[in-house]
Figure 1 (cartoon, rainbow, N blue to C red):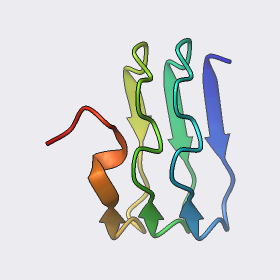
Figure 2 (figure 1 turned 60 degrees about the horizontal axis):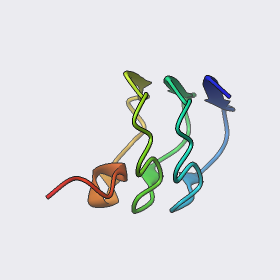
Figure 3 (figure 1 turned 90 degrees about the vertical axis):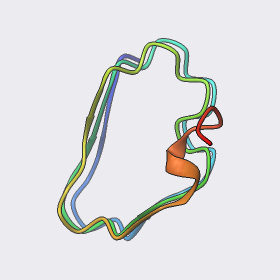
Amino acid sequence: MKKIVFPKGLSEISRYICLGCLSLEEVVIENGASSIGYCSFGNCISLSKVYLPLSIKSIYGLGSDNDS
């Protein structure tokens, strides 16, 4: 999977949801989500584009296990 689109109306992106998706390059989160869980995109080494809506209020662990 190279791209994932989280649909409008989701309240949160669960922790570890895409952990280790090595081929993931692009993430699009539609309006409505207010938080991104810890390590949601951890170890996604090909990830280069992330589109966040203005509705995001919290990003736990910045969504990656490599963040400090």
